[in-house]
Image 1 (cartoon, helix red, strand yellow):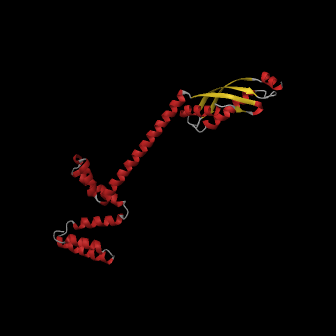
Image 2 (cartoon, helix red, strand yellow):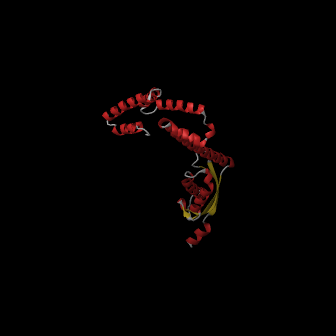
Image 3 (tube, one colour):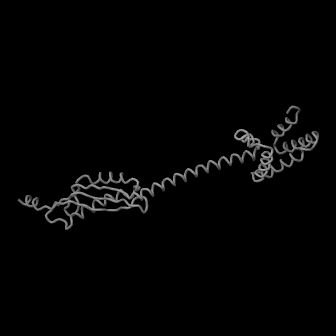
Length: 237
C-alpha cells in the first residue's frame, strides 16, 4: 500500500537550462541548451529537484569542455551526450532519467579562431622558409670561404647569364671579406698575402719559396701537405 502511495505521489518533470562554458581557447565560450527529464525516488525529496539534475549535467559538461577547442563543439556535444544518455541516481532522492545537450558556438568566434589558425600556419611556413634560406646562405658562404670556385660553379650552373667580369671581381672581394671572419682567418689572410706576393715572381723564386715552405711543414708534422706541394711543383704537376 505504501509503495503504491509513493508511486502516485512521486514527482517528476522536465529540465531545461541554457549554459555557457569556457573552451580550451581562452576567452571563447561554448553555448549549450540542456534538456532532459527527472523523477523523485523518495517521499521527502529535494526542494528543487530540477536544479539537482541540471547541476549534474553541468558537472559532466565541465569535465570535458575545458580540454576542447571551440572548433570542436560537435565533439563536445557527442561526448557529453554519451555521458548523459543513461539514467543516473543523484543526491536528494533524485533520479536523472535522461538529458541531452545541444552545443553551438558563435560564428564570429569560430571565424576568429580559424583566422588565428591560418596565421599560425603561415607564420610556421614563413619561419621554415627563412630557416631554409639561411641554410642556403650558410652553404654559399662556406663555399666562398673554402673554395670560391665552388660558388662560381654554382652561379654558372644556376644563372650563367648573371656571371660577368664584374661578378668575378665582386665574388673575389666578398670571399676575402668572408675569409677574414672565418675560423683561422689569420692563416687564410697569410695564404692570400703569399698568393698575391708570389704572383709576379719568377718561376725559380716561386719554387724556392715553396721549398722553404715544405721544410717548415715537415718540421711541424706536415709531411703529407709538403709532399703534395712538391708534386705540384713537378713538371706536369
